[in-house]
Length: 432
Ligand code: SDX
Image (cartoon, rainbow, N blue to C red; front, side, top):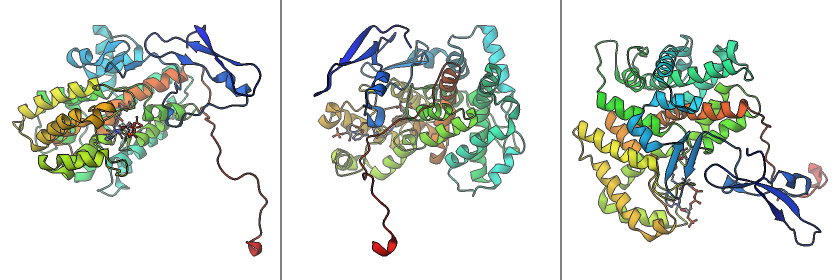
């Protein structure tokens, strides 16, 4: 947080003497904040369900300008990173605040590669799930259970423990993700290979078998790497805020990331990529689009255009633009550029962007609108889509957690506007 307030907000309350002085702090980019902490002594709480106008923390990691459609990771624009960088370099940037030198990059890549295996006992966890268990349920359970294997490095106040944990999580998420897929299709788990790059290794563990050599398409590996990059971090979204809140109690980082995975699962958040494909399947044909746009605009109809809208972006999500380009590249590479669901999605996007309801509410495609179409084209099953989002988001979660734990922090404990019963006496059942 800025050391000195740039000015003060003064709150006057009808019928009360004086005013409450609230410090205002200036960011390096974006929206200034009013520190409402002094309200605690005033007998009032702030009230902001959904945290529409609430900054929960100060952070130096990621900056989003929702009006301009800008996303910066440690100051670098996501479109430049997507074009020139790669996922592990972005992980290093998020964790360390600067792009790595050649030597630093080589060391980091080597470290991550040497943590990709999971303890052999982990494989037993999968046996307890039904084969048709949703892989996000498996991810919540297995990632949370990782803490049971690392008693040697769970001291959250030890920077070295935090560092090794960050490396373990980034390295092992693709392995666990691929295992959850292999378990669902009854194929043997594939061990990670240190001669493969990060995304290439993931696709190998997903689609390789022990029976024959499996060569990953360089185009698909590059697309997968870029998709991981587009999901890497995103300021204080619902799942990251969940990781921070869990972390504020001193819980171990594996448990905090498992909490983040659980929060991401919801269709209003990371579950939207899976929901987009289900929505496109329900719409079925371009001729039905108008009927579904009408449903989306009906306040009494719960139907929403999944993959559209965002709490922060009131312009194009810059990740959606890169995702759309990647989608075209992948489908061309696979010779399915005429994929009917892509055509349906493009038509839906075009109609929605011209419709006054969406224009007035500044609703644009978000990161989830096209990702599912790419995943489906690569051969990823729909129920694995959010697992890939969680895998991509892991460096963001663990960096945000580390930023909080490595500085002064307090346990997160919001209050409420109580609307329940005032105190009343117990009534014996014989008198009710
Ligand atoms: C992610 O926070 C992040 O950064 C998240 C994320 C990340 O990287 O971590 O970017 C990832 O979660 C992307 C969002 C994925 N979710 C979806 O695509 C689900 C569909 N979108 C909506 O559920 C919604 O847009 C949210 C949840 C994303 C945002 O909800 P808000 O900010 O609470 O906005 P809102 O619901 O108050 O909507 C404002 C208006 C409402 O209409 P009115 O009450 O003003 O008449 O817009 C309408 C909404 O009904 N609206 C939509 C809509 N999204 C909002 N109407 C139709 N279709 C939609 N998709």
